[in-house]
Image 1 (cartoon, rainbow, N blue to C red):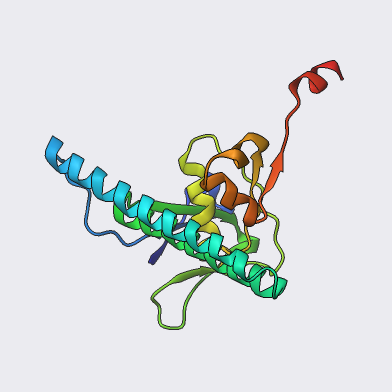
Image 2: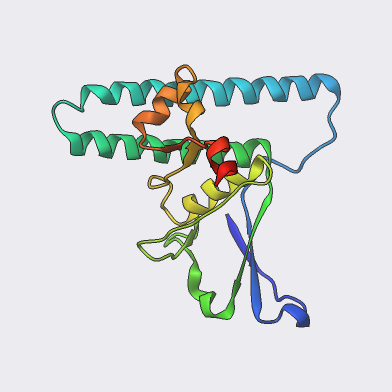
Length: 192
C-alpha cells in the first residue's frame, strides 16, 4: 500500500485527508460479457471456497473447546483475522479502490508505515470502540479494511439480527465466533 498525504482546500485546512491506495492487479479495463463472466466466476469460486474453508476450520475449533477454552478463543480469533485478510484481498483483486481517512490535526501521527515500507498501519489505541452502521453493502467491507490496517481484524464484534444465526452453516459458525445477536421486537417498541 502507498500513502499519499494531500492538503485539503483552505475550507478544510483543519483536516488532513489520508489516501491509502490498496495495490491492485492493474487499472480497471472495459470488459466484454465473456470477460465479465469469467471474472465473476473467479470471484465466486475464490470467495465461496475461502469462506467455506474458514467455516470448516471454525467447526474444527469445537475439538479444542473441551480441552482448553483459551486455545479455542485464540483459534477463533485467528480465523476471524483470516476472514479480514480475505476481505482485504477481495478488495485488492476484484475492486481496487482508494481508502480515504480524514482526521483532524490532533490525529496526525495515526498513520505509519511498517519497518520495511510494505504496509501502511494505523497507530490506534490498544482499546478502541468503533461503531459503524452500513448504508450500503460495501461499508462493512471498509470497516474490515480499517481494522486490518490497525491490526485489530481479529477483535471485531459484530451485532446481527437474531434470525441470521439460523442460516445453515454460515449462521451456525457465527455463533461460534461470539457475535452478538439481537432480537428486535417491533411490537414492543411500538407500544412503548
